Length: 270
Image (cartoon, rainbow, N blue to C red; front, side, top):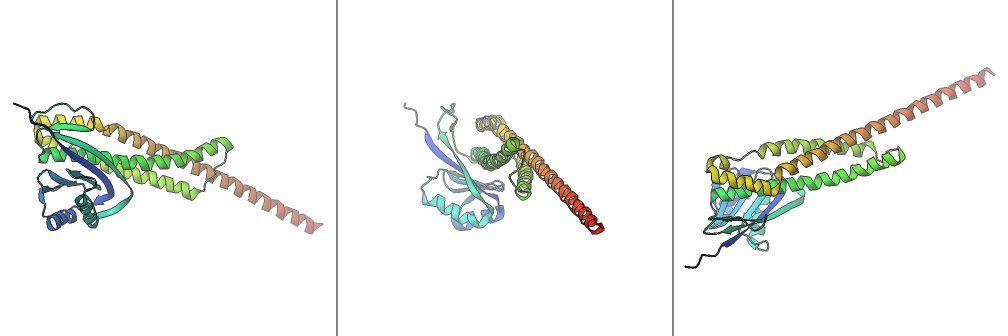
């Protein structure tokens, strides 16, 4: 008897906004796509057998069994724009492959997974890990750009002893670092083990831990937090140098003015 071949389910993940309005997203799926809602938060909607979409309140969306070129994927993304809150300027994305196989086995690489069926729990689990990965990727890109900018200032300070940038831009960098720290604090709290892990038993728990290791979520978050702290410290230090330079300049201005007054007074006496 020949063994049934595995079927591939392509999974595509995007981080598109700061958040989704979950009620609005649910209404869109039900009213516009006649979808079956399998879970509310995260929102898992089944559009047809093996074709699902999962939406997260922190702005990520996951597609199961959609082709990237498929008009339906674009249609879903466009329609869900009505539920977006603060869209990202830069969209991060990732992909994964689920192999539906009659017998579970280890994947050949880190970009795929073998499962016996695509059910609610498997879809939620894969969606949760992928959504967190693309969310972290968004912060990695933003923080990387910000760190590159502040490094130019620090290098100039080390080379010349002077700060070539104004305090307003540096204050913006400090504000950015604080904003990312706050958003990361929220996301890290959201990134706790989801309910489906506690409810799904040992198999789901093992699958979740394996997926987390594959995407290095915890290590990536720690690296971002370290870089954000470095941006904040560096920016604060450079601002203090700018303020010290301005204070020295003002002191010299005062000294020059006092000297000018003394000289003028001497001329009057003479």
